[in-house]
Structures are given as C-alpha cells and as structure tokens.
Image 1: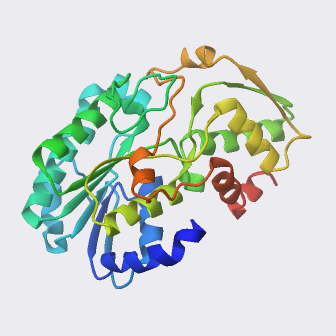
Image 2: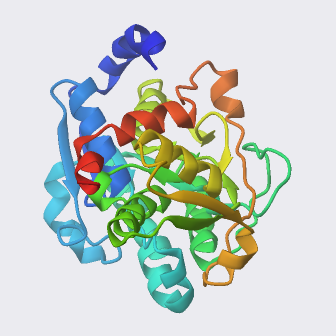
Length: 313
C-alpha cells in the first residue's frame, strides 16, 4: 500500500469531518475500520457500537442513536458463526437479514451511505477465479442470509457499497477465524509436547482485516457504489498457510505440519464451505483502486505483533 499512500492520503480528505456509525463494534473487521479511520481521517465522529449498545435486530435499539445522523454506516454486525447459523436458522435470519432491513430503514431516515462487508461464503466451489459478475450460490445458511441481505440493499437502497471480502484474519485475541484459532491451537500443542498437526487442503485467500478496512475506505473516499470483490493477492491452502505461520513464528523445530484432505475436516463442520474459492479483484484493478497485498506480506506483519510472541513463551 505504501506506493499509493500519498495519493490516498489526499483523497481521504473526502472522509474528514464526517460521521461514521460502525455496527458489530466488538468484532475483528469493525475494530480495523475504527483504527484505519482514526489513522487516516481528521475531525471525524466515529461511533463503533457493539451489540450490547446497538442490537441491529431490534428496531427500538436505534432510538437512542438518532442523534448520530451518520454520513456513513459501516454494517459489520452479523451472526458470523456459520456452524451456529445451521443450528439456529431463525436467529441467523434475525441477526443477519432482519438486522440489515433495520439498517436500511435507519439509513433512509438519515440519508446515510451504507457500506456492507460481504462474505466470500456466498460463493460455491470454483476451479476458476470468481469475479463480481459470477453468480453467487451459497452452500450454508450463513451464506444464504448474507446474500439475501446484499440483494435487499442493492434493490432498496442505491446509496450503498458492497464489498465481497476474502476470508479474514486480524484482531489478535478476538480473531476467531482460522489464523486466530490455529495460532492458539499451535501454542497449546507445543506446550503439551505434541510434535505433529494435520491440516486440510481447502484453498482460499487469507486477507488481513487492516488491508480490507484501508482499501474499503479508499472506495468510500472515491464515492464508489455497487459491488466489488476484495481479497489478498495470491492464494493458499489451510495446510500451506499453517506451514507459513510455523515458519514466521520460528516454530519449525517444535512442530511439523502434515497435509490431509479437506474432506476429512469438512465432516466435522455443520456449515458447508467451498473447498476451493479464489476471488478476482477485477473491478478494483480496472479502476486502479486495488490496495490488497500478497497474503504472505500481510501475514508476516500481523504475526510480528507482541500478542503472538507472548503466545509461545
């Protein structure tokens, strides 16, 4: 991103003196948006609200935030546990779809722009790269309601921006996705004396939440609308990613990573996920707005944080 910094820093002036409301404020992505806004914008009012402050599934929860009158709503709130969504379908609909309906209503009253971070889990398996024109076909309840929410926004509220994102990593101790879980699991295994770990070969694009938030703010600053794909450069399997984590954390002499078929691990998951999904940032590239780094560079930066060094003491 460094080579774009000077150009981006100028365009970020378009976001200064604006009011932002971020839902799902205790989550990984919301916190990255908060940090990036504080870093690159000036004189902004930012309301980053966790569920105990703003439950988007309840209309009356919005009443105490009428005063905010946001220019932008960054709608990160959702029931993000895909396996739980399979067990509690009504709860998934309430939190994801009904919550988005309430956000649209609130946005209309305030003439706010909606930013909706979309999940790559709206897609099915694909041997080819998927672009913004690829028809989504979700395999899970979570993916189904995320897609329905996207479609509702696009149909009923033109003042919106949808970004379909690669699989997250970020947030350190609040990271409950693969990188967060596997780093903590590796720490536990090493401390117990285990010297081998088997990991599946599902293929994806691990994408740093800080990169996603930064690039998304670039789009907002450029006053973009519609749908974009956004994922890290390159791709890897969970197995390859875990080996790289072990390498970056200097754990190679302590534990070995063995590859197994993703089908073995898929049997333990309630929600179906694509075994291979690689997104093409086609529109970002065409418009000269792709700020995504190679996943290895972002991962190395992320793992250099003190939190990870402390995990292995």
